[in-house]
Amino acid sequence: MPNTFNLQKEVAIPLGICVKPLGVSISGEEFPTVNMGGKPIVRCKDCRAYINPYVRFIDNGMKWVCNFCGDINNTESYYYCATNKSGVRSDLDQRPELNSGSVDFIASGEYMSRPPMPPTFVFIMDVSKPAVDSGYVAMACQTIKSCLEFMN
Image (cartoon, rainbow, N blue to C red; front, side, top):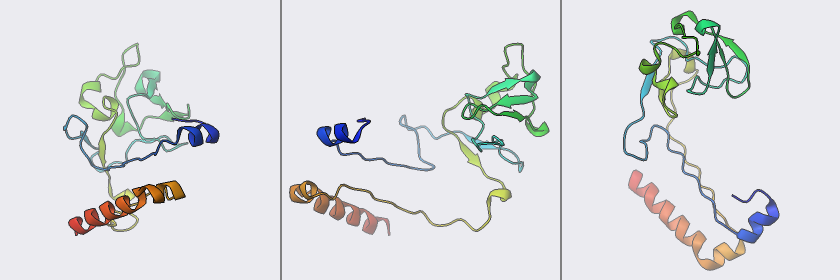
């Protein structure tokens, strides 16, 4: 990826991103689900990052260090598990959120400040003169429109 505006302008690579919540992995397998049994999802008290395979447990599992901000968090009693001398939890094999880079957390009622909303779609595209002249914008709009009509 070009990391400066001038390099981006010189390379002129179109960029697209597809965000697909609740999708499937590249291999076609579904992501593991994590249910905290009605308890809050374990998150960093400072940056609010979710528990993940890259956190580090300390003090025999009583605390964990956030891999994003470095803050030390207390491990809630419902999530506590003793660790070995290397800091590895004894229940590591039963915790997909500590083994997998992508998981679907089943959110408890605390996350529902309002009823769920329907999906929102955002389309971002290059609409510069060269993009319009090449037919890219018209083709992209036509494709998006046909996909939206198919979804209804």
